[in-house]
Image 1 (cartoon, rainbow, N blue to C red):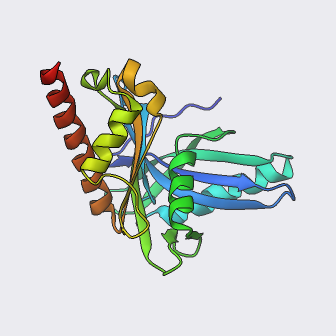
Image 2 (image 1 turned 90 degrees about the vertical axis):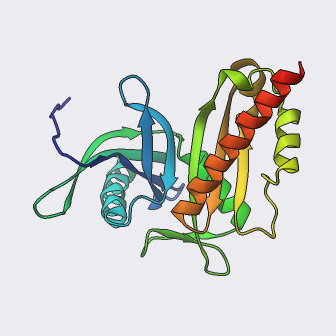
Length: 226
């Protein structure tokens, strides 16, 4: 184990998702900026895709180097490499420190597969961006820890009804998309997951905030009717 204290005024926590296929070929799947929080500020709350423009290709290259070594050692499947990135205030260059390798599917796996299967698009390693078949860029904000005590008692059916009523559901005609998951934890724990896909990072974040606002509003209305 190696421990070092990384100092910097501007810090980020990007990650690179990789895969080694059955033939032993390493490949990059995606990059993300992780959203962290909790009491220590180190709890994974969600992620944005892709990682920031200033360093997404650097993270991709570093992640691929890790994937290549793991492939040589016989690793097969999906995994991710997490980084702590600090911006040099003088040069403006980002320094990246790999801190761990997660040899498993993780919090960034499901959101990216949601994007891929809903749009039938592809990840472009030359740009670090995701494109639909019509060559339109797609971005998302995702969380698997959207929770509130006010959501307790809501059933998955209630959630779907709310989403359809307010137009917060996926249709093939829309350029934007919402996708809920982890709905089994909604009624008892007031917790669910959400992926919001947009044409730019701002739209994805807007859709997420809009959805949270609608859920809070409907949860309050249902409590008043009880």
